[in-house]
Amino acid sequence: MTYRFTLAPVLKLRQSIEERDLHLLEQTQHEIAHTVQMLETLRRQADSEMAQREQALESGVAAAALHFSEQLRRGLGEQVRALEKKLAELQIRREQQLKGYEDAKRERQVLSDLRNRQQEAYEARADYQRQRLTDDSFLARRKPG
Image (cartoon, rainbow, N blue to C red; front, top):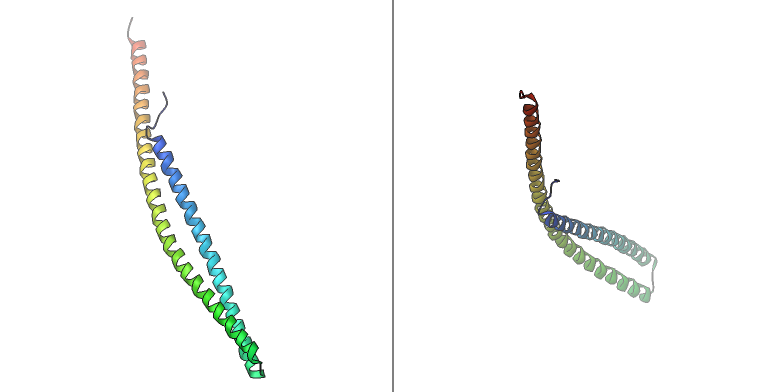
């Protein structure tokens, strides 16, 4: 008779939940990395635009070009603020997902540990039974007939 863990379906469900939570956490982490990269790009673009604007001001520039430059700077600023807000929200979401993943992992680990202890107890009982049968067989052969 082989060992059967009666909570195997529950353990499988816990493993599935843990894997799902890890996948969601990885997706959020990827989204954070992408947002950070976009923020860095926008900040570099804003810095470059500011340097070009200052250079144009030193060399003289038409009012229309200056107005366009100012509108571009404001637009970049708004995009940066929007991405910073999104990044803050993503970081909060990541913390929540990390907690959920850690909880799921802990719950799965409890069931895994229980399964391992039950299997060890089963194997110990099976070893005891085999040894008992071996001893009984040995004693039966040794009895003078």
